[in-house]
Length: 205
Length: 228
Image 1: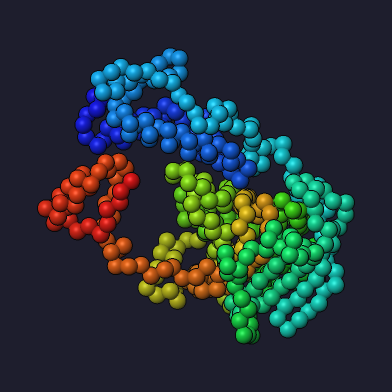
Image 2: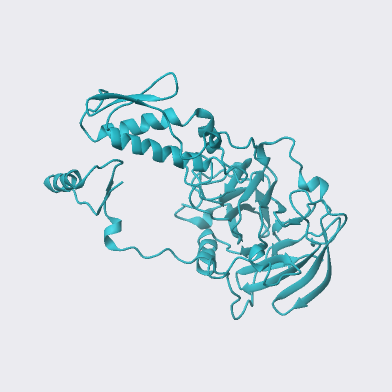
């Protein structure tokens, strides 16, 4: 396609070209397998996308990259060359070398090294049960710090719905928001008047 | 079959009517840390799971697949995490009806009835199915690691807040989930149901107006024009 073909397409075309030019394959690949552990590269994506659309809009032409890493293009009839100036340091491109656990054959399997919990103090109620869960051995602290004591609460909320919640035993205003999803963010299903005739059954004893 | 403390705490959720165990953590450990929570439930061979969106993937989830739940705006990556976060799955199990009212669990690959579920006379079916739903109310980054016989739920924080929906039909599971947990979809205004015209790179008002005029000239109804 000739530079500046006049149609609106040239903008889209040069955008695409810039995108492929300025998003190296390895960054694209990293984004493609973006998992819970990988986040650092997304800001670079945004920055490079912004930069390329800006250039595409201002030049309205098809710039040509040169061997020294810069570009040259023609602005208002004047041949102009310029180099990339990142608003982020170029090192942002490099990120931290990370591999998501699910792809890492050497990642520790928590199931192999952690002790699990023991239930005690089981109390049956009209609409469910509660118990205390206590760490069943030495803490494994594999991806954080093990919580020693937990509260188990089971509630038959309605005929067709059963709720099982496990939260740290020691919760107060200072650490509540780390554990408990606020009601105004995502409402929690509430118990209805009756759960009579429910087909569901919880067992842990 | 009961839940218990050996070798460590585990639990079951079952159906009273049939004795089916729909969810069990037997033989696995609960890991509960400030930045990592994991629990594991076993599943029948060749299980039928649907949900855990949002991603571009077959409707029935692969039995050896990791569903990452972490809202991300990265184009259209096949099998990867997308915009929506829905830590919910629906599972369907099939049974073969025997003589004296017995029900034998069946793998999907053993079903021999291509029209299953769409028969004009469903009473003639040799099979029946039961579905249930599991919703994990947790907003942290999550990996749902599906293996051929179990599923691991891993989150980067928060608490365990699980909801089980008994169905036993698929529509009932969906209704129970919508009505109690996430709510019904919002009613849309009439024009949103119409044709939406969109393309990257409209430059100005003149160009946009031309689109409208051209649509009009060719009698193409248009509900909306998106400027990007």
